[in-house]
Length: 561
Image (cartoon, rainbow, N blue to C red; front, side, top):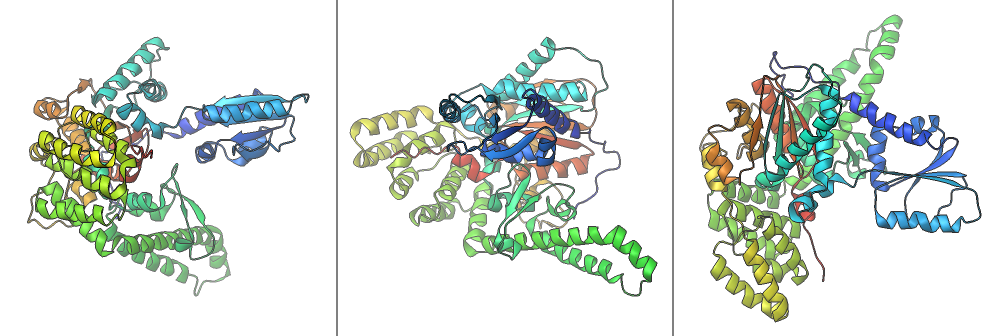
C-alpha cells in the first residue's frame, strides 16, 4: 500500500503556521468589534472557516450565535453583527436592506470581506482574460516565501505562470527583506491550459474517485446513507490523521479492497488480544488501545462503504467501455471505433458533461473532430455558447476548418436565425487552436509501450494513476525539468506548448512546491507523490482549486436559451 519513500527524502516544513496565521488574523478582526456579537457567514466559507477556527474558538472571542447567510430577513436580536462574506453585490445589498430595517435602533456592524472564490480562477483567467487573481496568487507565494525562507529555484510554464512569478518578485522586492534559512528549494508554476488531457481522463486512484463521486470540499467529504448504512450522513475529514485513508488515498482502485480486507483482519486480531488478559492488562488495553481501535474500525467501515458505492458505479459495462475508449484515444488506437462510441454516447444523451469530456479528449488527441453538430442536435442550441467557450479554450478543435465550418454553418442555420449563425461561425473560425498532443506524447514518452504487462500493485511509473495507460503531461514536465535542472533540451516541447517557460536557479533542497494555476486533480497529486518517493523529493502542491473533468467543464458552461 502506502510505500515508504527514500531515506534521503527531506522533512516537510511546518505548515500548521499557515493555519495559525489565518486564525490569528480572523481573531484580530473579530476583536475589532469588542463585546458579544452574532456572526453571519457565507455558506461557501463555512468549511474553510472550520479548518482554521472551530465554534469553541469563536465563542472564546465573544461570538454568541452563528448564522449562515441566506439572503432572508435577519432574525438576530444582538446589538452587534459581524458578517464574514465574499465581496458579492447581492450579499452587500442584502446587508444594506437589513440596515435600513434596523433604522432607529442602535446597532454596530462589521463586514469582513474574503477574496472571491479561487475556484473561479480557471474560467475568469483562461476564458475571460480577467487577470485580477494574478496578484492574489503572487501574494500566496510571497506569504510562503516570508514564512519559509527564499526559494532557490523557480521554474514555470504558461503565460499566467509568468505573470504570477513577476507579481511575486515585485511584492518581495517591495516588502521587508529578512534573512532566514530556506526550507523550500524548488518552485514550479504551471498553467492548467498547458495540460488539459490529464483532468479530462477518468480518475482511478481512490482519492480521485472519492472526489468524482462524493465531491471533496475543503479536505472533507460527506458520506450519505448509501455509505454509512444508516439514515444519517457523516462528514469525514480526509487527511493523514485518518490512518485508513492515508494508506489507500494514492492507490489504484483495484488494490483498495485487498488492503481493506487485510486491515479488517488486523483489527480483529487486535481486538482478540483481550482474551485471556488479566485485570491489569485489560485496564491498560482499554486506556491505551481500545479508543484508537474503535476509531480505526469506524473509519474502516466508512471507507469500505465508500468503496462498495464506487464499485457499483464504476464496474458497470458503460464505465469499462468508457475507460477503453479513453485509453484508445490516448494511444491513437482504434480511433474510428472511439468516434462511433462517442457519437452513440451523444445520441443516447447519457450525460452532457461526459459527452463533452469524450469529445474534448478526441479533439485534443486527434487534433480535431466533426461531432459538434451532433452535440447541438442532441443537447439543444442553448449550449452553443458553451461550445464556443470550449473552442476558445482549445478544448474543441475542428479537424478540417473550412469544410466542417461550412457544414456547421448550414446546419446551425436551420436551428437559429442567419444573423446568430453568422456570428457563431465567425467566432468558431477565429477561435480555433491546434493540439500537439500526439507529438508531445511521442517526445516525452507519455504512453507506456503496449504489449507490456503493467502490475498496478507495484507501479513502475506515474502512469499507474491511469491504469498504466498514460503518464500525466503536467507531472512529466515537472519530472523532466527537475532532472535537467531547467528547460535545456526541452525547447521543442515548450514551443509546442506555446512557450512562456522560465527558470531562475541557485543551489537548492529537494523540497518542491508546485503551484497549479487553474486547478489540479487528485490524480496529479498522487503522481507527484509517487515521483517524490522514487526520486527522493517531497512535493508541496498549491492550487487555485481542486478540479476534475466535471468541474473543469462545468466552469465553461453557458446555457442561455
